[in-house]
Amino acid sequence: MAVGDILAEGLMIVEKVLVKLNEDIEKGEIIYNDGAGFLAMPNTVVNAKAYMALEAHTYATATEHYIRALLLGKATVQKVAGTAITEGQRIMVGATAGEVNLFVKGDAPAAYVEADVQTMADTNIRIVGTCAADAAADDTTCDIWLGVK
Image 1 (cartoon, one colour):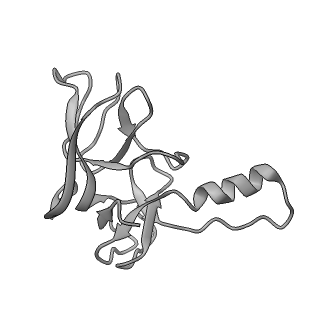
Image 2: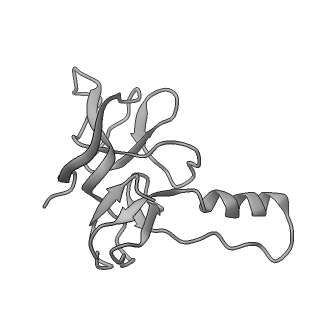
């Protein structure tokens, strides 16, 4: 299978979404709506629905700025290389916007500093899905159940 492919059609939700002005989107990227349109999701987003782009979009050359995006379902997404993910483990957006990585639970700080506690709590709600098949550390794609936490 290739990045951006749907792996199971049952229990799938696909929506048509508007790409943000001047943003390019790659097929298989995790995207979200920042209020002005859809773009690659960075790992700092806390309270937004995660989608997967089902098609690439180059803003400068496109005449239509709507794309199809998967909200819920099993698909192959872009993955940050460097960490293995085992089937059943939860995933989050990694350091590269739009690419997933193994979810790493937020660690409570040793001393109470409100900002540090909030950062840790935010990390624990950034899960975007569950790994559907083992992915090796050097893999750049990962099969996931998007929206299944």
